[in-house]
Image: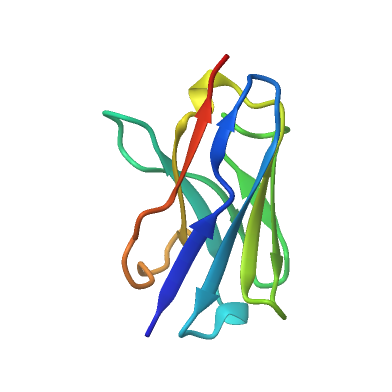
Length: 117
């Protein structure tokens, strides 16, 4: 069964850091462009970063310079290192296939990131 499980979210103060993880199973992870998405209350889900099988990355302007996406194909895991967090980063974060790819499995529950004093 195809599965993506996000973890690592939590409550953090502005300026703080978190690292999110996404554990993948049930498909050939190393062949897929993977992305991180987020959805804030009352807003649409948006793509914020993606990484190709070879490790090339791309970021939305809102997170560029603050977030880093990476992957470990041997562990079937994609990561999102988040630094200099802002209240505007508060959202549920999800992983899935990147731009142009079909959704892998379901979106699941994601992991909540809350940035607040």
